[in-house]
Length: 126
Image 1 (cartoon, rainbow, N blue to C red):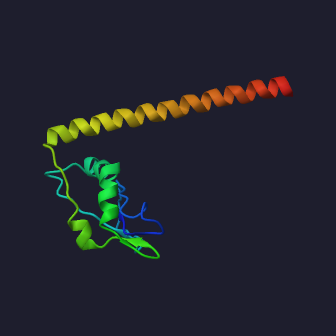
Image 2 (image 1 turned 60 degrees about the vertical axis):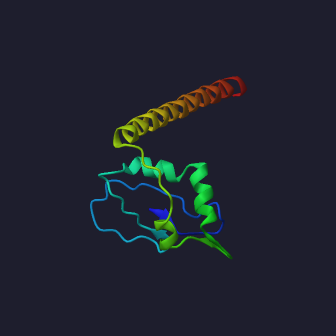
Image 3 (image 1 turned 45 degrees about the horizontal axis):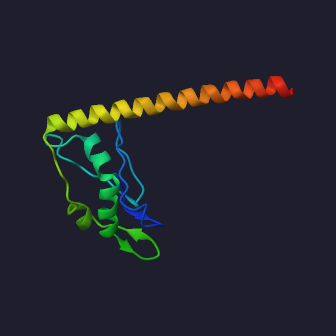
């Protein structure tokens, strides 16, 4: 899905991957559904690629800026996409998954340390 309208130029064109929908869905009018040819591109690759700083700037430059920033279907269809071979996209996907897992582990460790700090503070300060 791609955000079609935003109150700021930075918000327009943000892309999210929605997986596992088991039924037909209705989505808000400020969002466009993107369909991609999965025989040539991985969904996770295109999601990360379109959300990179470089691509965000390109998408922002294609947007109409007024009271709200917006992008139309024609502009979305003309977004330039660099497609490496599928095997490289798969390696990219594995790397992103590893980074995300490490990030989540780091958050868990930080939460554990914060919990210990809170316990020590409560013990010392009553």
